[in-house]
Length: 159
Image 1 (cartoon, rainbow, N blue to C red):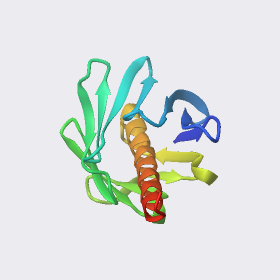
Image 2 (cartoon, one colour):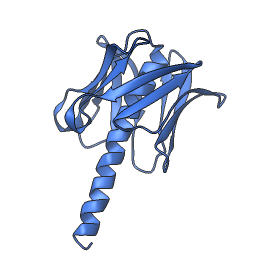
Image 3 (cartoon, rainbow, N blue to C red):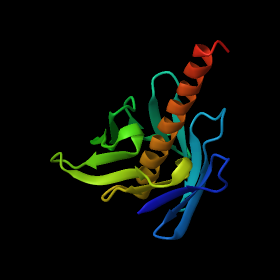
Image 4 (cartoon, rainbow, N blue to C red):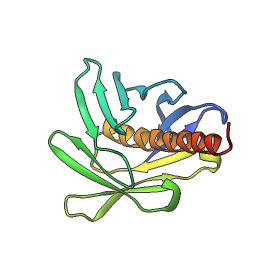
């Protein structure tokens, strides 16, 4: 099981562990379009398409390894010709369930910490880089929704 935890609470820097063993770190700082991480010596980049809500996982050479459609309550990740469906199963994006080939839930991405500080992912059958990608996509989606809500509240307040 993967566990992403903020390194320092006010920051957007996360440490990713698997069963208590450190795997990598990544940052979701403002102004960045996506995130970068290194896993087993290989560098990856997650690219965000701001207006479409689509995410891509790129390897060090810039080749697309996986992509999502627009991430909403229901979204799909496509990799190596395989389509993996995800569905929001708890309010406020607290949990997403990954479905297997037969549509039965086989994995979850769940916010477990207070103040958006910790998220876990149990996604059996996926390559580790794809598991990290799915987890980071959910965190980026959450950040995007919070930013949109802040803009709406500011505009409604007349600021």
